[in-house]
Image (cartoon, rainbow, N blue to C red; front, side, top):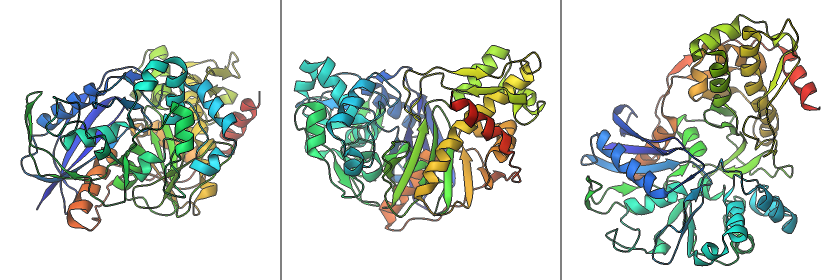
Length: 475
């Protein structure tokens, strides 16, 4: 059967899966790390992609590929196709004041674009660029996002002299899910809001053409020994997607499903048939990769909360989980509000973490371990409550990401949430979603790929956990 490739160019690394187009079975895979930090030269992502291609055995036998990627990252190009400055990533919060400026300037921006500007979104980063690096802002001829730029490069476009087809900026493409994370494209109208873009950047610029679901971006260009890697020509390239939309596609999520991902960030998103317009900004009205919508709430603090507490306790994640399960539900009133890196939902970029309810009884390793897991999940549960206002009644939660591999997290999730929690087998669901999209583009039909389930804990809701978290959040 034909083979297809899915790429996940995430915050931390580039992961590639090569799949059987009919069944979704992974036949080989590869990965390469990305640099740390909240601003990165996109060339590092390109180099990592090529390294991961080599690690995955190359592309000579592949018929199609698609790229899923971290959302919102600002890549600005000059007229020659060169990157003007390192890209600001989604988790770079320096544009929080710029976000406030855009909100004041456009009181109706949620109705216009489906999102309330926060520091994560591309429009706010462009306004920051205009405010703090005006000379760079004036040079901007085109703006794109990470998966847009990698798709463009794979098709042979790029800086003059470095790419076989050169800097044809009008060949930049994106998809609905990625465009909906910019704060200058509307999922409702399907058009860019050039007035918001102009207010952010200071002038108009080339923006990627928004492809429809299942529409090809083009084909790869023959590239020999670029960074020592050969990219064959003629491979069909799908539209790609933002990471959350790609993960939803990889999970085959449907109406009634809510996907909660415990990775670097924490996300809650629901499959919906209608766009979400949340004036509070708690829910971003994103589009999905299927032609529908993906209302989403995101926290900056998820699995790294567990990393931090495990480090303080001097234990690994397995021991952290054992400690947590040795404490009672509710942690005896010990509550961790886990805003270690500020927070996006709620929009508190300068917030810090706070530990409430410390007594001689509760200030122990066991109670602290459980409070860390409960705090992380309660933060996401607040987003869950609002996201589900914009979707069909929830039938199940699909719990994924590195944090979902913990037995303690799974157990406590069943206590925090009041609907069934299903934990799929650990997998690269962003990359799988991109591969599924690639199979769709090349065949004309979206394949039905089965998903293996690792755990289905019984619903065991303990209302006290969320009640005491909510009480502390009011202070």
